[in-house]
Length: 361
Image (cartoon, rainbow, N blue to C red):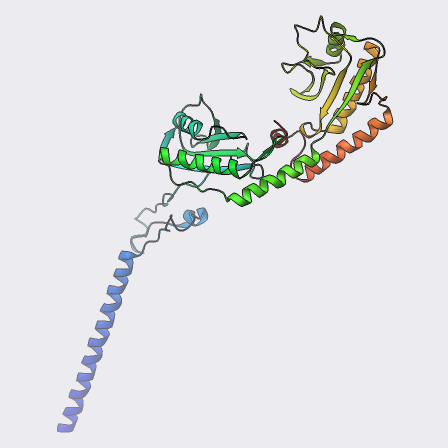
C-alpha cells in the first residue's frame, strides 16, 4: 500500500510540474506575441525603402477578427510619401544636367526664381527651371512672371550647344548654385549628379554634334552688274520668302524656317534699306541638323535659287564662283540624307526639339 501511495504521489508531482512548466511557456509566448505587436509596424520605412504602389494597393488596416469582419469597414492605407515626378517632357537626360528640389511645404514660384537668378548668374549654357503643378500633374516652365506655389522644382543645365560642351567649372557652378538655392529656401537636400560622368557625357554628345553639324549654301550672283534691292525683294516674296528680324529672308514651313536667303556682302536686309540697296549677290543656306526631311528641303532651296537667278538675270554658283549643276546638287542631297539618318539612329532626329536646342548658339 505504501509503495502504491508513493507511486501515486510521485506521478501527481510530475504532472503538476509539467502543468507549471507548460503554463509558464504559454505565458512566455503570449507576452512575446504582445510585445511583437506593440513594436512591429506593417508600414514600410519611407526613409529606407522605396514605396511599392502595387503593395500599397493590397495593404489594409488590421481587421477586428473573424467574428467582427463583416461589421467592421476596411480602409485602404493613405500613401506614405510623395512619389518623385518624372522628368519634364521638355528635358532629356542625354542633353541636360537635371536636379530636382522638394520643399517641405509649397514654395512661391517667384521666390524660387529670384533666388536662382542670384545664385546661377553667369553660366555659359542655358538653365531652365520647372515647377510641378499637383493639381494638373504637370511640370510647367517657370520664369520671372510665373505665379503660384509648388512643392517640387526642377533645374536643368543644357550640356551642349554650338559653342561646345560644359566643363567642370560650369558643372560645379551649376550644382553649387542649386545647392545654395536649396539651403536658402530650406528644401530637402537635393540629389546631385556625379561630376565626372556628367562632364564626360557632355563631351561625348558634343563630339557627335560636331560630326553632323553641317550647313550648306549656294550663291546667286548677277551675270553683270549688281542686284537691286527692290527687285530682289519683289522676287523673294513672289517665291514665298518672308523677311525676318534677323535681316534674312526665310522659307517658312508650318511656322519654322527651312532655309534662309541672306546678303552675300556684309550687312543685313531690312525693310528700310531694301529700296536703296544694291549687292553683288545673295546666298541661300540650309542648316541641316535643324530641319526635318533635309533632302526635300534642299531640293526646294535649289529650285528657289534657280528661279531667283532667272528672275534677276543671275546664275547659281558655289563659294568658288563655279556653276552649281544638277550633278553636284544630287550628291549633296544624298549627303544630307546620310547625316540626318545618323541623327535619327542616335535618337536626335533632325529638326526635332532636342536638335534645335543642341544646334543653337
